[in-house]
Image 1 (cartoon, rainbow, N blue to C red):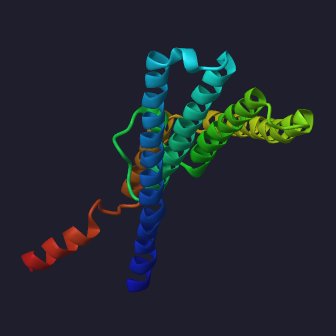
Image 2: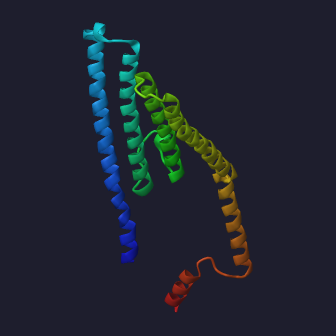
Image 3: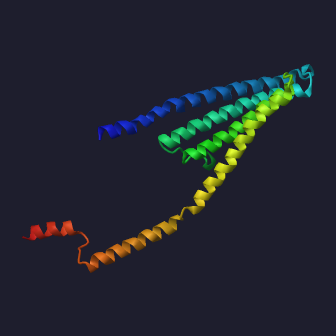
Length: 203
């Protein structure tokens, strides 16, 4: 039993990445918030200093990129805690019931992060061979999108094949009725050990 308790207690080691990822996500959110305030100040106080519209878009995309990465880290942290420790009072879309749901959320957000990162590269136009650079981003995004499509279909099919809770309850009730009927036919008392004790007391 001590070995079993030790193995079960080892799941609390997952608190290390949970806390680390949550702190990192919070730092990214704070950094993104500060950058957003600076951007708004520049827009209001020095709007004439902005070179082009692309510069504005690039700065906004970089801020959004920080928030998205922070979101990925937060969802990973919440998901690991729910899977290994206990459920959390979160909205339905943040509830993680198995590792597949966590994978789908992470893969989806990763694809968005890659797309936003590529957009910032396109707007900055620092790369000489932008076509090859775009292919390098497009291939993983396409692979991740295909993974999401296939895995979502697998999960949906699995849920459709599972019987409803009402069907399970009715089947259990029917099995109990058949068991009690056979027990009565065989003359087996409902609580044999209790009757033995009462019989001994009467003697």
